[in-house]
Length: 349
Image 1 (cartoon, one colour):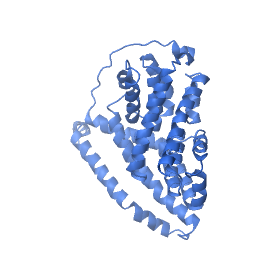
Image 2 (tube, rainbow, N blue to C red):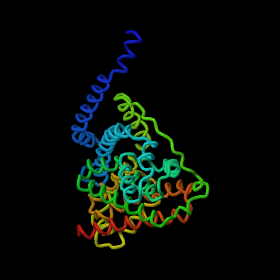
Image 3 (cartoon, rainbow, N blue to C red):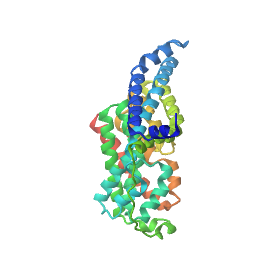
């Protein structure tokens, strides 16, 4: 086969679309047989199905491929969606926006442009240099890790649309209100000196020509990059969930993280801050907690604190924010998370 023919096929969007459709079809076939296949594997183990270890093993063997398959599909789909956005376009969309409208726009963009905590510093600097108001910047930085597409997709698939929609609504509310509040405090003077010295450099951003093949490749690259980095954390999260599922009595967990224990919400937030995880890794733990009777508000507060107030993110942000501004940021977001936890525990009591 000549080189020209191979190059032509490589650039043929029809072949790429057909291959993508075949991949999606194969995904659904495998996902459909996952439950009986995992049950068959568990039956081969020398473990009593009714034992604690047997229950934990069954949870881990079924949940691990299920979550990783869901993660792959969601990340691929959102990698394609994300090809319509870029850091430059995001800055351009937010630059010049007034507070209020800008906070809503920034939090909404945070869903489809899920830059992780490792991207916090360059994104923050890019926003500052583009003239994005400080409060608007914080709305984006809160929403991006906390209300991202991976969290929503896995919540929808593993727990249900009600919890996913609830998380979306209140996550956005926290990002919008917290960002607006920080903006009203006018704390630009609490940025590090070298950050405040940055000046806006207005430049026209050329519209890149992105083909269908480029977008599919973007989805593939997203899977390689994101799933390749987080699969170990996902497995660790599922292992914790398996332990909770098999060994933690429902009554004990309900008494600790239930609706009647008023201190459970702040305790869950404090517990979540030092944890280093991500939405994909923490959701299996959330699934196990809810299955054991933990209150919805307490569980959501725990998840939000892990994804939005993690200690590693604070350490990264210290490069551009003073300790005083980090304390204000953590305090405002923490109050919002506590409010969500107490509200849901009260509504669903």
